[in-house]
Length: 109
Image (cartoon, rainbow, N blue to C red; front, side, top):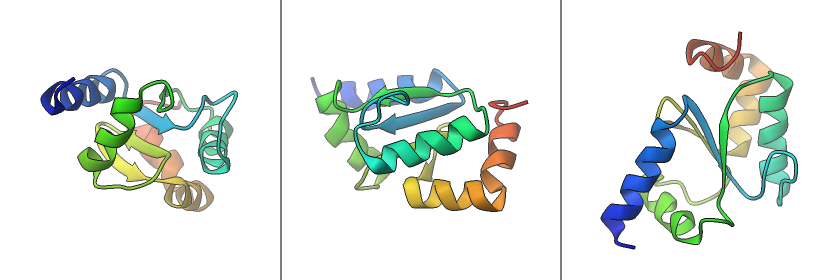
């Protein structure tokens, strides 16, 4: 798959939902502690979001690092924009910013 094709797939994933979490594993079975913490913050807010298990999409795994200029996972996107990884998402959850951001995106009521 070419770099253009992979970039197109990333954009399609981001366009498919207002909130997208690229993570290791799934929200029910995360395969790293950082992905687990990020999914837990979203779950605590009862957020509607799409997840992508990067272990099931190996070519996406490396390409997304270049696309986002972010070297680690998970990566949370809201309205196509990178919010950040676990530390940022958890901090935003704690200070209420994540809830506001997700409400603006229509991901929580």
